[in-house]
Length: 274
Ligand SMILES: C[S@@+](CC[C@H](N)C(=O)[O-])C[C@H]1O[C@@H](n2cnc3c(N)ncnc32)[C@H](O)[C@@H]1O
Image (cartoon, rainbow, N blue to C red; front, top):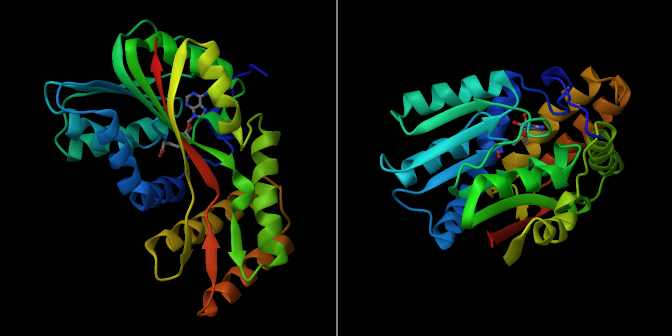
C-alpha cells in the first residue's frame, strides 16, 4: 500500500495499442459521459480536472465544452499518455488545457478551487482510493462537483453463450489488477470515502449494457480481449496455451449470430463538496 508504481508497472500498459483501445472505449461510452457532464451543469467557463486523464480523450471533449473562458487540468502519471493527450488537444486547437505529470498517490494536487473533477477508471488502479478522494476534495472549491465512472461489479463481464476460458479471462483481469495493488470493484467503497472526505453524494447510477454484435459496444470487449490477453502474456500472467484458448473461444462467440455480451458494471457517482 502507498508505494508508487513505475509507468512500466501499470497493469494495462501504456503502449500504442492501449492508447487506441482507450479511444475506442471512450467512443463507446461517450454519450453516457457527455449526458452526465450536462446534467452536472458543466458549461462555458468551468474549470475541470481530468483525474488520471490517460491519453486525453475525455480531456479534449471537456476542453471543448468549457470553451476558451474555462480550463481543464489533465493529471496523469504516465508521461507517454500525457504526451498523447497534449498532441490530441493540440490537433483539436485547444489552448485551455494544462497538463501535469503527477502520481496521485504521491503528490497533493493542491488547493486549486476547481469547479468539478472527472475521474474514470482510475480508482481501480490506485493503492489508496482514500488518498485519491482526499486529493480530489482538496482540489475542488466548496460546492464543487466530483464525478466518477468506476467499476463496482466487474463480475458482470459475461458472454452468452458462456465459455470457460472467457469466464477465466475476466477473473484473471480482476486478479491482475488486485496483484498490482488495485481493486476492480472499487466503486463500492467510494460513497463512504466521499462522505468521510466532506462530500455529499448526490446521485449513483449503475451503468451496464447487454449487447449483440450489431451494437458498437461489442467492439469494447473485442479490443479489450485482443490487447489485454497480449499484455497478460507479456506480464507472464497467462500461458501461451491459455491465451490461445481465450482467442479461440472469442472467435467461436463471434461466429455465432445469437451471441450477447454484458459489460462489467460501473457506477456513475456524482458528489458535491460541502
Ligand atoms: C484505464 S486508464 C483510464 C484513462 C482515462 N481516465 C480514460 O477514461 O480514458 C487508467 C489511468 O489511470 C492512470 N493512473 C493510474 N494510477 C495513477 C496514479 N497513481 N497517478 C496518476 N495516474 C494514475 C493510468 O496511468 C491511466 O492513464
